[in-house]
Length: 244
Image (cartoon, rainbow, N blue to C red; front, side, top):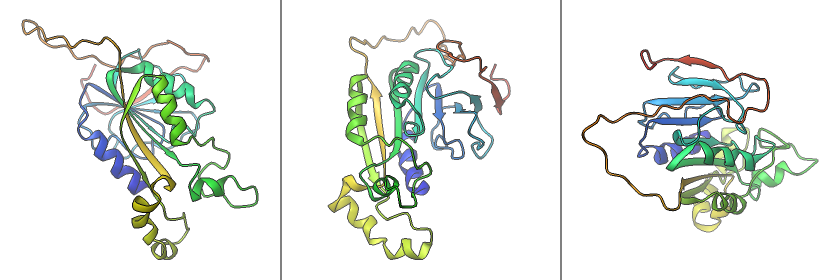
C-alpha cells in the first residue's frame, strides 16, 4: 500500500513549485521527497513518534486542526491519511485552506470506506485491516463536497490497492489479478484514494513582477493564531544551515 501511495504522491508533487511545502502527519514516510521546493516542513502530533527518513527539513510539533503557520504562507500541503486520524476532519480542511496561498495545492490520501478494507474495518467481530479500527473514514464523494465548499478545484485523483490486505506475500500474489482488474471494472472500490486539489480565490489577478526590485521569498512563519491549548509549537530540527 505504501509503495502505491508513495508513487501517486511523487507524481503529483513533482511539478509543484513555490517557497514552502508542508506535510502534516505520517512522518514515518517522506511524501515530499520528490518535490523540488527547498523549504520543507513536517508537522506531527505528540502521539506520533516517527520521523521522515533522511533527516531533511524542519520538524514541527503541532495538531492538524490548529496549524502554527501564518495564513497564505504554504504553497504545497500534504495530508496523508490526515482526515481519518482527526476527530474533526472538516476543521483540518479549513486549516489547510487558511494556510495555503491562492492557487496552492493540497494532496490528500485516505482509506475508502466502501472498499473491502473499509467494510471489514466496520465489522464488530472481524479483525480490522486498517491501522485504526475506529477511524472516521471519509468517502471520496463527501471529501469532494467539503473541498467544493472551501473553493477547491480537484484536478486529479486515483483509486488503488484492490487486493485484500493479507498478512503474507503468498496470498497477496495469489490475488494480484484484482489489482489489474480493479482500475477497469471496479475503480471506486479501491482500498485507498489519493486526491489533489487547488485553492481558488475569486477575483484573483496575476500581477506582473517589479523588475526594479529583487524578488523576496516568503517564508512560512510560526504564529500563535488559533492556538487553543497551552502547548507550544516546537521546531525540533532544521538540517539546512543559514536559512534564518
